[in-house]
Image (cartoon, rainbow, N blue to C red; front, side):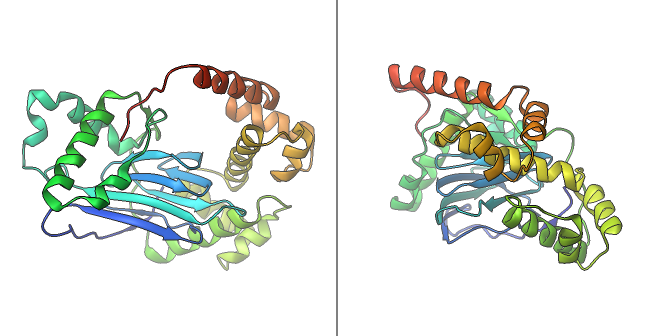
Length: 291
């Protein structure tokens, strides 16, 4: 994605930043910065974007974004208020070559992977503890968290390199189009309405969107709708046809086709697989890394 640069200052005296972020909702804000970002969602649902990765998020979502990786979170239309913990740090916040020591080999590999974005599916988020500690203990705790995360399974989010920066005015147009998509994807969404948010005609807006994001407008809308459908399939007992309609698909066969294209399985298979996994987790002892 091509987005705008965000400048961050470290928090004296720890040389990194801890933020408890609470807001009614998150709007599209494509940005990147030179620091690593560790974000844990405590409450709220929506779409997480990192480079060319577009995925849903919910409570417990924990992700690490490397330097210069474009990213944003966007609230779902019916999302509860957002509560998140965000930590920003540089690779040298403990010293120029600290993580080059062999004992931190796993952490070094994780930080090397972070420019593509990392999602930790099995982490139990307890980053809130950082806010209750004094600066020395807080820094030691952050190191402990990074070590534990480096030993946990994780998923790389984006493919390829991060794109270059766009002119600020163009980034604002992309954000405006994204806002229309994320606020209106559950209904019919004419391209003209999306383009109108950027004060452009449909063909020009389509070219700009594809050039700036790597997605056509229609493909991006389908990604957002299918991600919403996944959430409904997991969290509700609504029929597949109702899930399709509530996700913005007016045609059930089109929904099934798009879902299979993106998830490599049918909606019914997705729901069945999730329930099998849920039962397996419920019957097993607690697992995952506590962070």
